[in-house]
Image (cartoon, rainbow, N blue to C red; front, top):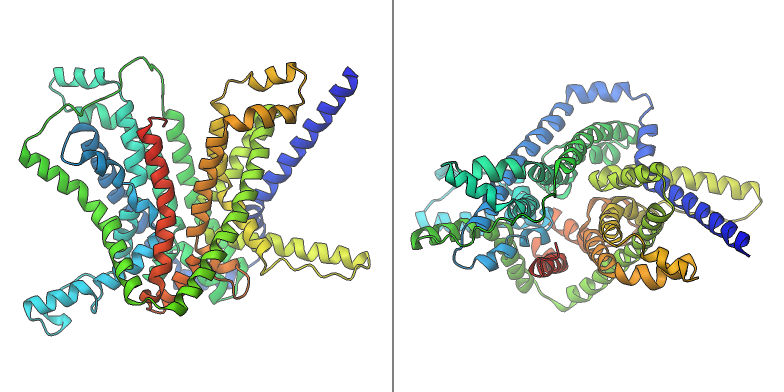
Length: 547
């Protein structure tokens, strides 16, 4: 009986390992497919690109990354220090309100500010009326649909990444170090806070730059030719998949550099000496003038990153409201919820299998592969969509050839179906769920499942009764973050969705591209409201001091 139990355990663990390896291979298949598909000879195309657009793709991508990186660094680090250092008016509200721009996808903010800043928009119209200007030649106003406009929009959406992670780093710094700097007459920020928070800042900056490289909606709407937009143009504009794959490899190079910086920064983060008191600078009182000044400094990013775009969407939603559009909007919202829910369930199930296999039946190779499988989140959706198309197309052809060989009269269709769309979602967003669930499992005492096994319970029964109830908050966190990310996702959905299938993101994109933001505002507002869920969730965790 004991021998049978050991054999059963060995077989089940072997099956789990094989299943985990198969899942990891599927998650990496779009990236592997891009590499293999890029081997085709496209010399004439690249000769044309070198003479025409390639320099613009590289230049715009580099300047966009540089501009967004510098701006988000300045805003995020400054805000984190002000929040941690000073006690000012409405500080507690502003501390979590600074996260609100994360609820807005950058492409929606781009649509809003184009409507607000363009020649016929509210701001320029008001300027002409106020100063009696007759034409645009009478005054200068910067063009929002430009590289500078893209930097402005993306920066005010993404700065919370650096703000949040830097604030946590500042608060984790031992207060004795700040006291020592003060005794020696040294600036606390430059000599203590900033150097010790450098790994956290680099990690946050790497995330910001990866999101910047991945952006499609903003650069497409502003006609800023980046590598991501170039891949899209080569794919759909020139119908050259091999050339798009080769350009994707250049984007791959950018991403790998950023990933290397991010992983290096994470390795340098230290969490020792937990008995030392964390920094608490809130006792530092300031004058009324400084109080007002800091309050207005902190409120500016909230105004530009959240309040103005939301007010524009709200006003347009009311102005363009009609019953027929409401029925259509309900249908599209159902589509978004359906596809996001199905993909989220699959992602959670596969992630649970991966984390269990890694924790209880893993080996060094599996740990490395699990980490690599998460790099899909760092890649632009356009690149993953292209890779998934190559892989699924080859799979579809192979399966249909096999069915024909077996004389089975069945033609499998994967391209242009929900299958390829959901598959690409899983490849892109599994890293979000894996991080949350894996961290939840690693926080548990390692002997809890073993204790259940010694009582005679089976492994899967022990997981069901012991492990899953304890990691339920982590699973819920993973599900919320994944669901919201999928609802907001644009390029994958736009490129791989079934015919006549609209989601909230594609619906907003279609109307905004046709200069009909008013018709798209209600759908955009729904995306924003859904995006607020993880913000409120994170704020609740922070208030309970669980992160």
